Image (cartoon, rainbow, N blue to C red; front, top):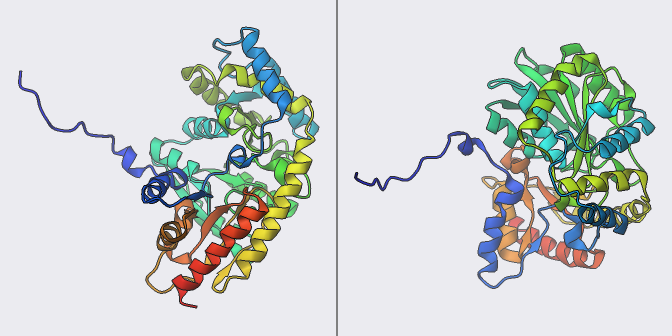
Length: 403
């Protein structure tokens, strides 16, 4: 039988799939091959910048492994982790029972389970612009469409409610709310949250409340969105990755709100979870340790993030042709550069990388228009390191803009 030399074709869905935060690393590797040192400000991994996982979480995982908990777990997660997550939600004002909580491989898996379970091919999901690109990547995989709603940098990155309403149609299934926000560092006031809930209720939409950074608001933890209305169809998310400094463990949890309207969604999500067997077993034991144990590391972490956010805002706003809304939480900022005609955010980001060895992520990777000039910075480096980085950003920007 003759052997064909034709390459194996790939699925068309892969052509729709992009994830700029990781995709741009290939360009950084090319720069490193020239001998230049690259400073990576593209991925929000606290461990890479010296913020270490609390010891009692590590001890819980080690103990689980030594006690023989290395096999499959129940698909929704071990009982004690689900109970701890439910109790934590209840303490924050969300009346949810353990049977409506799932332990997932990070929040990312929980988001994919929910979108896959409630959105059909050809349907639409409202996602903010800028957004966290996982949402659009998952929608591409399942053959659904993102409908980008504006958040306004001139109003502290608040959602544009009128624009959201204008996008809703019979194919709209869900509304994504990322608060505290990645990539902008924005935090929404209670009125905005209530308005978003009312809008979703009026149109029969599920809210996916991405609250991974809820404990990393500089003024203290932000209450879950579902606490404002326990009867609203809200699916809430959190994880160990950010506030508990364990991103590589892929340990997250999701709570499907208590409204009976979400019962079919809960059943669909659990059915899909069965198909992937379970999330990593030993790490599930750290969920209980995190949510019932010492959280004092968060106080120091928030203080250090505020210091870095203040430095970032001041330095970026001092650069001619550049502006930055002050983050109120997380470890991200979304500066804007006034681009010359014909230039894009990719031109700026790649120019900065190749000239100064500083890797950020272009705003169009988060759903903004390329000509708007937004880019995301991860400001987890030390203040001294950030100072040197912003010196280089300043020098490059002046040359790029000719000022």
